[in-house]
Image (cartoon, rainbow, N blue to C red; front, side, top):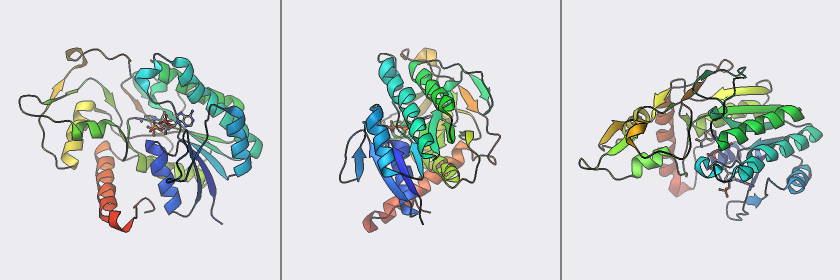
Length: 300
Ligand SMILES: NC(=O)c1ccc[n+]([C@@H]2O[C@H](COP(=O)([O-])OP(=O)(O)OC[C@H]3O[C@@H](n4cnc5c(N)ncnc54)[C@H](OP(=O)(O)O)[C@@H]3O)[C@@H](O)[C@H]2O)c1
């Protein structure tokens, strides 16, 4: 019999890909997000409402809970840290509690931003969240660890995927001319990660092929925003003038983010950022080709 999975944040960038992927594979997927959406079969569940969340999970009685919901507006979190904390720290605690009561695994997503600059493996305890979003995400991890039960925490970074406002959209859609080229920084570095690759690693948790615990899933190479922009344009066959700049050349940003690499010691080596981009472009092309047939490739 197929497994029943309950997804929080099913309308977000990761959650929508992941829900489609598991749905195509024959899982029974209960999709939830902040707002109800009948067309997408998404049930509105506010994850900051402890009773509402826990009653819903108990009624549904799934085989596992996957949390893709989060407060992800890093800039805005600086001015409303309490709201970020409620969504990113308190809600995962409610999920951990109910999952433990039902004796089912919780699969949660966290971020490279729990660390400062540098390289960090899964065992590292040198946490140094540099902004309010990052602090709330680390508190979420702690809360899950403190509740106990069976949990998987997947830390990832620079996520990209379809149907979302992200760096890929910015690079491909922003107009640029020789007179006014795109300016992208060389001194912010990270490990881009395709939601499709992350979803397939999370599937190993859903299928209990890996032990509960903390996992690092991101590209095996660390690159600058500038290098990533060039890779995006190359893999999509777009020609556009881009020039490298340093952060000091641009207006200051309201928030500090780290340049760091999540070191993976548990999975076989992850693909590079370029390989992940190639896979992304392939899947998007297949999706467009299948559009008339109303199919997605997510089940492949
Ligand atoms: N994007 C990245 O580069 C990145 C990098 C590292 C880690 N992560 C982590 O990866 C996970 C997925 O990120 P993503 O980029 O896919 O996020 P996303 O696109 O922003 O999706 C998050 C979803 O959570 C929903 N949500 C927020 N507050 C809620 C609430 N109170 N109740 C119910 N749903 C609520 C959002 O709804 P609304 O839109 O209505 O708010 C949204 O649909 C997150 O845990 C994030 O921290 C992301």
